[in-house]
Length: 343
Image (cartoon, rainbow, N blue to C red; front, side, top):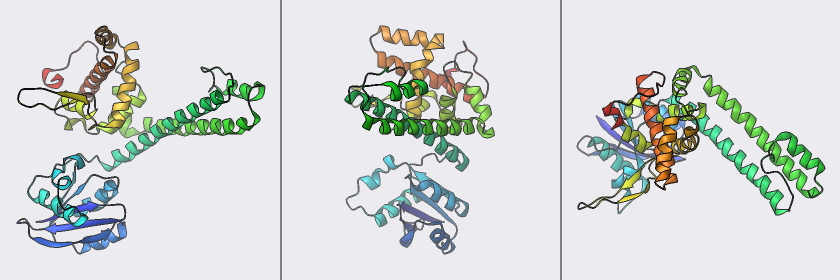
């Protein structure tokens, strides 16, 4: 068996091919293009297994090489301490160390979602980007009005009819500001139309429809939260317990304990930021529709921790989502999780 370590970059891929005893068979650099990889694959010794670090470019390279490899793994970048702590660090050395970790079975492997799931996830994240840009543009439009001293109704500003009346009838509105506001409005409308089209396409996707429908039976969980959970979590079976799912969602603090002294740090940055954002926003609204969540929220607020109350609700939502996803049955209120799942 030949072990291949790949150090992936935007334009090039450095590789190191080693035998089981650590002997270097071959090293080099190949262009990060499909045509160059095809030529490179033809000259590879057989059989081979490979590994690479998770980067922005890993997805398509993984999909392109996977059919030709005995196995192909993706390493968690934050856990490759052997590379980060090296005195000598370059692409050739990095590729060699990835190959060494692979042949020694010490590679910190991370989950690689199926191609179809990653494609749908990319669509959802693009939709979320449009929403953020739309909010930024709305804030900018309000800022333009404030800095020029124009009086306006904050609650109605982004309503189509009110905005048109403001442009036509406000005597305070400078003439130079009208084109900028029109551009802003057009941008917001275009983003909203595209965002809704992307969301509808995902909701109608046959591969997701049944799963999302089950998840939305949970009071306080809407289509966006359900889609985010399904696409960001991927295969729910990879989570051994609720604690692992909560940690992945970034809803718990880090820990640094030693000699019997326990130290808790703020919310960990090692998380799925997309899922964390959606769950936090859902937790702020979910108590309105779920009495159990409202009771939990009020209990934490009474202790004087409003932010902790939101986190507690978000963690409970993760418990609900995980239970419904595992059982593949609609949500049934009043039933507690099994002990092994609530651990």
